[in-house]
Image 1 (cartoon, helix red, strand yellow):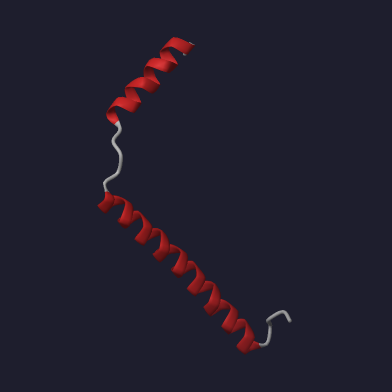
Image 2: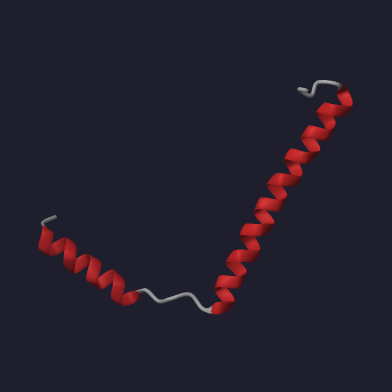
Length: 58
């Protein structure tokens, strides 16, 4: 692929893409925060379990 074909491909891609709507942005933020909270919650539960068993580092 030469430079001219690459630029044409990039131009074609930019023409067919659209900006996300405000609704899509808020959905993305909600899903990201939910995922972060889920991972943090799992980590917290593991830490508490290790603390209960006595294997936690001090």
